[in-house]
Image (cartoon, rainbow, N blue to C red; front, side):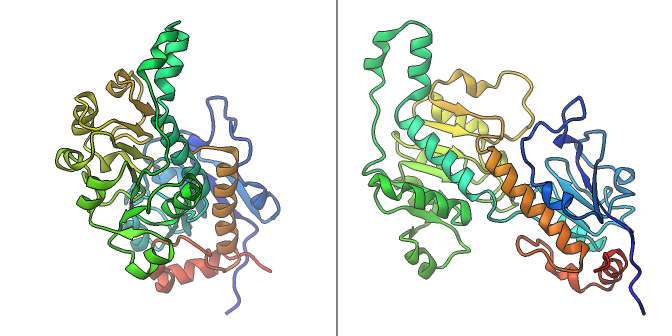
Length: 352
């Protein structure tokens, strides 16, 4: 039977890619990949909701998602929906099982975020060690003599400990190699000793990492296994001179326990990009502590990051439109074998 050819493959972008004026504030989102194909069109979903509504995507063949949730209800009318592409690598807001049941492929932009998040992590390590925030505030307040109270330290001879040893952690460790640090430590139950050895990393238990690292950096996804992974007990294992960095997800850390640990001097400080409740619309209690650095889940946002993520997710959409599987980051590969998905894929494929 001949494949039915449709005129366009329609890709929707969630409303949070646009500002109040309906314009994209980002310099380059990789949309040139879609622009290059006249048979692929993209459009905004319009209203920016915390959860994508089923009626919003009824005319879409695929959706590129920044922050909104994709739920079972979102996919209630997914007869013409082929794929959900997450603009990034975290996918806790995407119900992957529901995608599979609805014959919808879900994928992330694996690898596209590694460099930017790694640079941000290293930058934060340097800023914490050199008391950048406190020194900045001292000058702004005219307190020049405060400099004697904030003697910094180098990364040299310190130990980096990563919770997770995926692409971001590996790139961070590569960038840190010039600083003369000790052998990095990692806790990751999904990585074997041989792989870690090739990377020059020592695999250890979480408790051993917490007790020995001068910087504990979170580079793992938020799952049921990692939710609340770092709580009062774990923070109590850390050195009083150690710092916690979270560029992953807020739910991994118990925020009450972290506030107490930093305020009391149990640990030296922290740098936090991800919070349990986002977005934050009023001053956060962490802001009272000068030995904490904070960012609105965007410490790694750069023009290059958005370009690379955008190109990756858009290329994934083009690949699907022409019958090709995305090269990286597929979350539910089993959907490719489902009869419902295969029929939909054939129906929605563009002609050569």
